[in-house]
Amino acid sequence: MNVKYETASQADIPRLVDMKIEMFREFGYTEYLHKNAREIIVADYSQLYEENLAIHFLAKVDDRIVGIVGAFIKSDIPFRYFSKGQYGFIGDVYTMPSYRKLGISMNLNKEALKWLRDYGVNFVRLLASDAGRPLYERLGFSADVDMVLNFET
Image 1: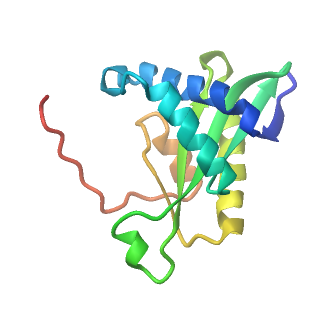
Image 2: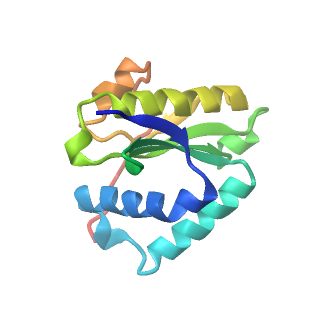
């Protein structure tokens, strides 16, 4: 199998968003999505791409996207008050089930981390699933101080 790696373009955004929504479906989060989530995400990503605050890296087999990883520049509270108020965020990590365990996600994450380092951020954050945690530990990530309390809804 020949896996081709490339950077996404604006034209790829609708397909990336479909894969993001599939990722939410696999994790059982679709019930939390806004009824217009797809349109909202497409609009947000289009703007972030125009502002050079986001990029996605793709893995393709026979011109079909089989894996994605997104890199985002964020500046939310409290980080925006630091002298260097931006940080990197890894998201939209998804590989189609039949292409998992082939190193695709590792390769895509390395590209995303390189882009974030070249952008000049001091640190990178992400939300890791239980399945993804070992991959991120191999990439040098460690647990942070974040804590979560989920309210029953």
